[in-house]
Length: 89
Length: 271
Ligand SMILES: Nc1ncnc2c1ncn2[C@@H]1O[C@H](COP(=O)(O)OP(=O)(O)OP(=O)(O)O)[C@@H](O)[C@H]1O
Ligand SMILES: [Mg+2]
Image (cartoon, rainbow over all chains, first blue to last red; front, side, top):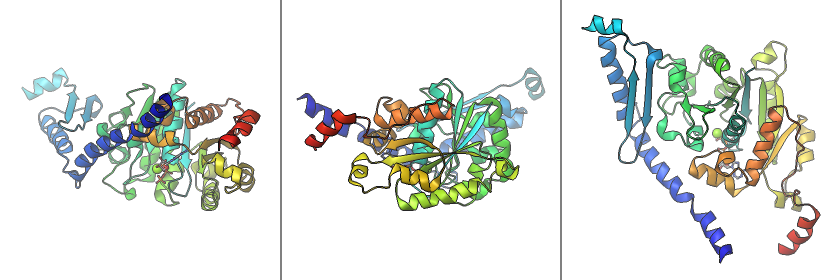
């Protein structure tokens, strides 16, 4: 039976994964025509708001995104120097 | 010193993106800092083949237009920390790539990577010429069939004329990567022979990648084939090709002929 297992496993294991990856990706891409991707919009607006209060050094900003099936995450890491904080206060 | 490689072909669908991911991962596995750059603006796919599609934040066009700094756009591979991806934009078109912008990005990448591998779009238009523009080395991906060989010949002409190196009177190092090679069809004589392709294109052979289900499986999973199953036939062929790119001398084996006499006798009986 090992012989059979070998084939059934090889032929059926990767396609469901491909299907799932595509579903998640396309759900995000279809909604993102014209830059209306919510995560992208949030990213830009959040950065703009921070930029209103402190001068952001673009080198000191890390943005990470992970588009999931049920939830997406947006992680923005901004280094705010002490001098900028004082100015904003 | 940093080397820029362009993976190019003229003809579409011959295996450029597959090869970019596989060679990139193979070089990164040698512990050399590697970035794969998607030049297929508007039709990006390298992110999918690398399995990074959910994590794209910024892309090449964002960096060129100044919306993001280069380090912010680079995505680090989850499996190999020496491997990075610079994705293409999916929503803009190729006109957003400027010659100066591409040069700036390439110069900056040279400072922090050992290998910069550019996945060219098909065709001979702007996207393809910008992808090859700063290359030191070209990997010409060719399938053993007439239209692919003809398009590769055209691309070789462009590499000798339209690259920064060519304009400085230097030469881009060119290598032929024969992909989707089908040993059964070769045996039946229905496919151009390796020697025929080499004679026609007359550039040195980097490797022969067999036609294989393992490539499809790897792309389903979102992993370069050299990482998905490093002992599969295409992975071994790509790993050898990467060693040759890095300057090692590795004898070339023609897929299907590895099995030798024993395989030939018993392979035939089984067939
Ligand atoms: N050695 C191989 N064996 C089997 N299938 C392969 C092989 N190499 C590539 N393919 C398949 O061929 C198709 C095209 O491959 P790929 O996307 O890498 O080509 P490309 O040259 O980048 O295409 P394009 O010109 O559209 O960018 C894909 O479905 C890929 O899985
Ligand atoms: Mg491609």
